[in-house]
Amino acid sequence: MTNASASRWRSAAWRLRLAVHDHWRIALAFAVAAVVIIAIGLWKYEDPSQVVEEQAEILRFGSHDSKSGNHPIVFIRLRDGIVRQVPVSRDIMRQCRSGSPIRILRGRNTFRISPMGCAPFTP
Image 1 (cartoon, rainbow, N blue to C red):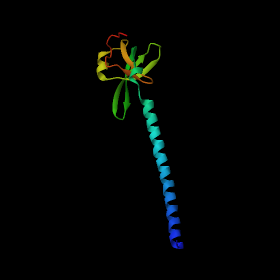
Image 2 (cartoon, one colour; image 1 turned 90 degrees about the vertical axis):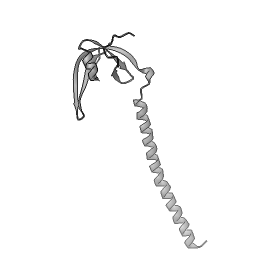
Image 3 (cartoon, helix red, strand yellow; image 1 turned 180 degrees about the vertical axis):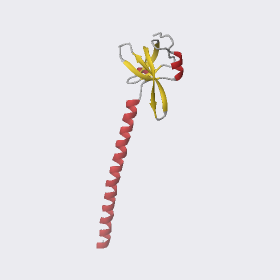
Image 4 (spheres, rainbow, N blue to C red; image 1 turned 90 degrees about the horizontal axis):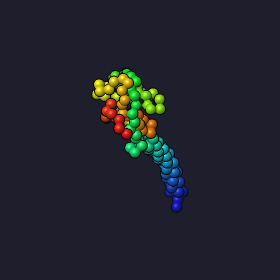
């Protein structure tokens, strides 16, 4: 091998080493991003077997103003005495009254109004 070809091999090997080093960091960044996205998805995921239907009492109705408009909410008191603020549809607002019982779906870290709304609760 001549001195010029050896120099070319050394420079090619050096370029390859730099390219692998740079792509390794990019691959690591994508892997970390994927792990974070999966972790957030699992944290937000709610197992349907963990959702429990409960009865709560309506304290009052209200609204929440935002850039996308006016959103109705309901303040409810759970059986253990805790007061929560839950988004509600306008149909349920028309059906229910303050002081009446309402069905809620209680998940691991969420509360939703049941589609049944103010229908009688039968456990």
